[in-house]
Image (cartoon, rainbow, N blue to C red; front, side):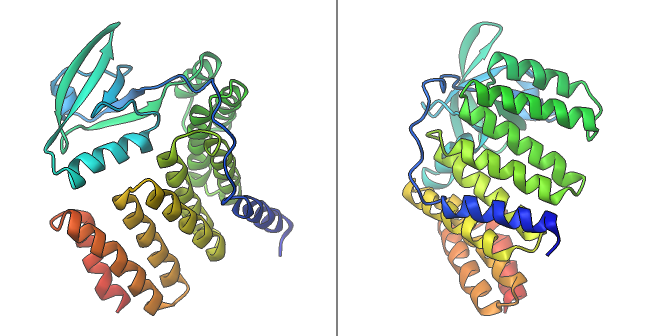
Length: 288
């Protein structure tokens, strides 16, 4: 095994071995609740209603979201479990707070966590640099390290997640896994179980990209445990879907079909007409 891949295998194994251990208590520094709007799709609800980049989502369904993954879990529950068509949100813009009723299907928003001051300064500098360049990546890493030094675990984990994405896009797969492992370690110090599950799904995809299917499976099994404990059924369905993909790449079509059926059962019950349900139905033919 080449030295770089051997080091990567040891890194992935180390995080997988501790995946089931209790996380350290969340830091008191985790006080930056709410999510910041990063991007707005043209002609989406948010664009029409005057929501601006930099506005802060303070609460959704009466819950303060701490990460984009946490918000997704809140919205999934409102849409699939409670069958709501819209959600109640409280926004802060220009120092003023106001409530809005937002259609679940038409938000058109991309969020990030709130960042501590030094991390925010580095992140803003990163946004001004040429995407994909070495200086941009180094600045993003500096932002992540600044958040880590502030013990803002969710912000630091999210920033390392972005580092992993940047490295993955330029095909630095070993570097991508390393960044995502760091993100996972930091997010496990927070109380945000949605982010903890999501980073493991991201890690599973990164491990599949380097053909480490055993590690991918371990990350997905841990994600499924976290989602099940949080009663996040759509999250569990996503985990089963990932496990189906792992089995498919192992050419174990029987196991792939079994995992896909578990995902389909949940998705069909919660929203039989959704694109996710249709995707699971299509996979039945692929795995049969």
